[in-house]
Each structure stands twice: as structure tokens, then as C-alpha cells.
Length: 295
Image (tube, rainbow, N blue to C red; front, side, top):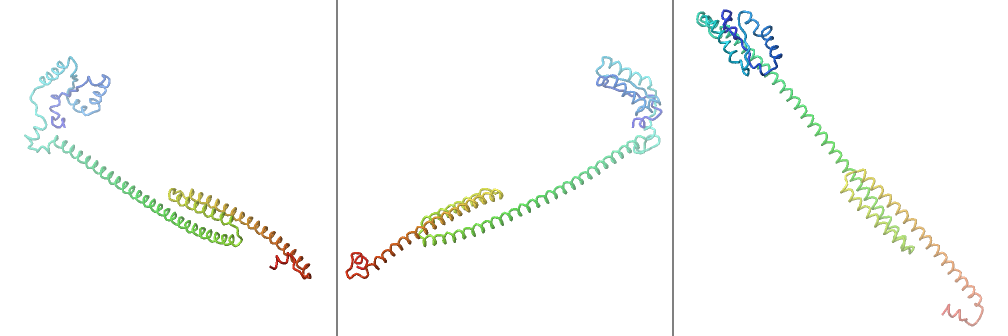
């Protein structure tokens, strides 16, 4: 822009000054200065007569350095026509048609292209992010739906298991009731009160086990624990049932044996009486025994 504003004819009236040397180390400052002069934007202007100067605002010689620059400009104060004057006044060109205007227009087009490129990249990135976010959201929705479906299936399976367990418990309870009824009837027929009592205790323990099972089902959702508890309770109930049945059988056998012994003793007594009766049957008088037997 500066080169096109001034033009080649005014380059020897141009001073390119660097400042803020106190802000950087001296070696770094000279390295930057050499880069500007030898390979950078200043190279062409310096080759066509532009001067250079170094000014440090913090230096005690800053005023002298600045005056030196001004004196150099005054020394080269011969009238000179800069390029943009010639283009706009003599050639009647519009600003956009001048060399500086073209540079500015090119710079603006580059800025516009850069802005459009950045805008396109931003739109593309936003679109990609939206697509990624949409895909992520869809994946999360599918995962949630699968999780809900899995939980629903688990709940249905648990409900079926609970229903099956309830039906199984009901069947076992009905079975126990029938067995209890049969054992009571058997105990009543044999007069075995202890067997009835044992079976009632068994039923009470079974009811307590069922109540504990129901409480465990309500408080503990872990099916393995519930199955283990139920299995243990059922095992305990079965063992108690078997023990009660064995006890009832032993007591019934003992009662039967006792009844048999008593029956045999009574039979022996009856046989003895019959023998006595047969022995006294031929006598005319009634003995005290006959009077006792026959009134």
C-alpha cells in the first residue's frame, strides 16, 4: 500500500523507522530488522531509495534519533509528485483504479475470501458437529431404548418368576394342607395325639417360612438371594416334614405295638377265663367266679 501511494519517484523521500527496541533483546531486534530489509516488505523500497532508522522511545538519545529522521526528510524536501496524486489528478482515475486502490481492493478481496473460507469452515465444522451430536444423540436414544427394553424384559421375567414361585408355593401349601389333613385323620384313628401336634408345629414352621419368603421378596430384589433363601427354607421345611413323618411313624408303630401287646394280654386273660369256665361248667353250684362273670 505504501509503495503504491508514494511511487518509485518519491522513494528517496521515504524513511522506514523501527521503534520499541527496548522491548526486545538487541540480537533479536537486529535479526528482525535485517529480515525486513533483506527479504521482507521493505526490500524493494530500500532498493529504490527509501531510508531506514532505529528509534527507541526509552533511550536517552530518542529525541536526537527522531530529530535525525526529521532532518533527513527536510534535506530531501524537494517537491515531488507521489503516485496517487498523478493517478487521481493528472490521469483522472478513481481511487479504486489507482495502484494503491487496486492493492487495497485486492487486500479486501483476500480478506473477503479468507472470511468466506473461515465462514465455510465454520459452517462445515458446525454441520459436522451437529451431525456428530445428532448421531450421538440418536445413539444415546437407542441405548436408552435398549436399556428400557432390557429393564422391561427383566421386570417381566421377574414378574413371571414371582408368579411361578407364588403358584409353586400355593401348590406346596395345598399339598401340605392335604398331607396335614391325612395325618390328622390318621392320628385320630390311631389315637396318636403327638403326631397331630408335630404336624401342627410343622405347618406353623412352614407358614413362618412362607412369611419370611414373602418379606424377603418384598425387601430384596436380588433373585439369586431370594432363590437361595427359598431353597434353604424349603429344604428346612422338607427336613422338618420328614422328621415329623418319621416321628409320627415311630410313635404310630409304638402305639400299634402297645395295642398289640395289650390285645394279646387281654386275649390271654379271656382264654384263661374260658378255661376256668369250661372247668366249672360241670358243677351244679355257681362259683363266685361264675357269679362274677354272669351276674
